[in-house]
Length: 189
Image (tube, rainbow, N blue to C red; front, side, top):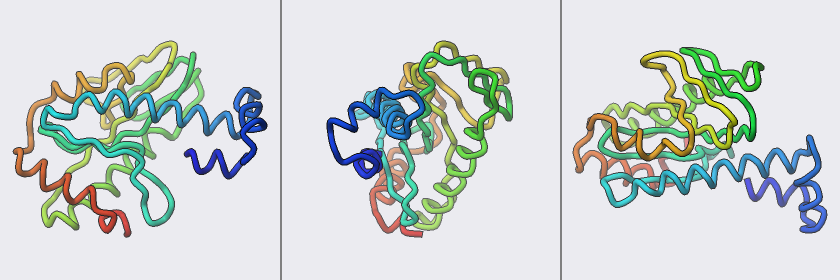
């Protein structure tokens, strides 16, 4: 994201002005970066407790994975969505922001499937990946449904909820998947 912001406006003074202009592309990218940094800080609290985190993993295509978390409860592909001051609602298959539908759920599910395929291919075993959306700075987040296909959480709850999930992977499995995830070759396809 930082590269994109610099690409859009290399002049630091003009870049700062653009960050405060409503509806500017730089403001949108800056908000996204703020959300990703906030999520990364929260996820890094899991380190040292059997969890590993990776941030801004680059696919060969140029797309990226905001965050990948690997620990006893499994593997999680996490998308950061900053919706400052807005009302976010999530029910089984749909997510809205201030009442407007989004594609956040479908995109997160698609990304998790792609990450699962890449990790499974390189690990030699099936590696399920659960999609997660980290909602940053929303005025209100409402989640309906007992077992939604995508875990949608306020950024403040990420570490607590993930570390509270039932263990599914052994220490050796976590270490193996993390080692594979750290390799750039995993994301080349």
